[in-house]
Amino acid sequence: MAFGGLGSGELIILLFIFFMLFGAERLPKVARALGKSKGEFHHGLAEVTAAPDEDKTLTDLEADGRTPEQA
Image (cartoon, rainbow, N blue to C red):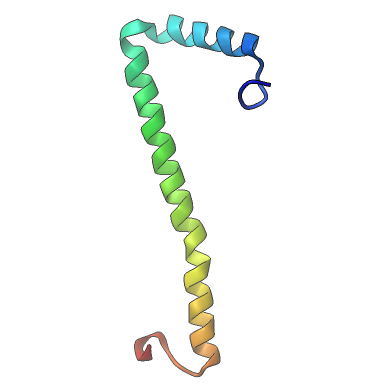
């Protein structure tokens, strides 16, 4: 397994298909756009997974008998 469960043969075939679809000139632009999309996805995912921490602190405040405005 070379990458994500794909062998080297499958990766070569995929690269060839991408090259044929997008051409040598557009391939770097497509790769850059995919990289940015992946970064934005991970950033959004980090925000979503951080949200339960805020809920936990709100629960802690309510357990102490305080409101978020009093904190």
